[in-house]
Length: 317
Image (tube, rainbow, N blue to C red; front, top):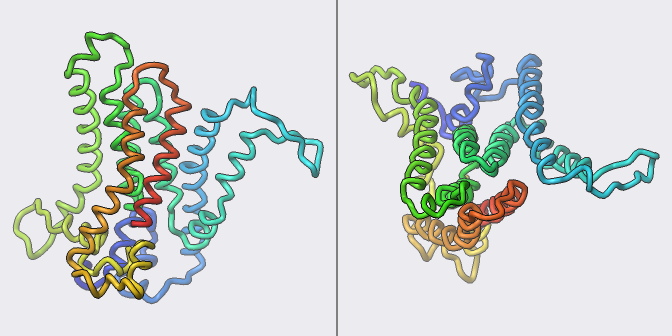
């Protein structure tokens, strides 16, 4: 009944943030559809956004700043307005934490984007540690970020390429282990098991949710409904999840929207996206693969820059 009576957009939002919107009236089946302006609901959403921002996103930014910037050797700048000393690390934190888009979108529109971004940053932090155990922890954290909000698919190719390289990396620097495929197989299986178990725990409720029309206790109908709303390809490339390049090509004189079949446009977008992200993915694979002079700081820098490059390619294509 819920799936059939709510719109696709409402269902998509509720699936992404259902655990955060615990107040019943905020997600009531019919009344919330036309807006909910209760003061308690507003206070609840503002408080949860700020709390998650502090616990997840800000903590991740602080941890990454400490690794990327050596506070002892960083250049200190004297503030023009006072006698206090402002370090490079301080400017890094202020820039990241006062980013206008995040403040306006998350704190004003209750999007909870910083929660998924914070989980992704924490995953980057652990993935770039010297020990491969950090990669396993990072894969779990990134799986949580991806399931919290599907926009983390922008960063997924970067994570996959880097972790694949880390599977070939040998931290012990022994030629015998380096030439053995068991080293790669063990690491690859560890990552696979951690990701599969995380996804299974998060998606299991959708598979066992009782439906009167189904006789079995376990089914895939609930999962298919979620996937249809997360990836509404049936609405076409120019509906909701549209990219800039295709908007530019849809106007005269090219007008590809009327020249190319709507069924072929998603495939064309996929191929163009793959072409645009391959250079950055190959670079991240090589960064993760290298065995000598491993530097968590340098690897984190490469992973951040590579993720930005790949996410922009996803957005444009």
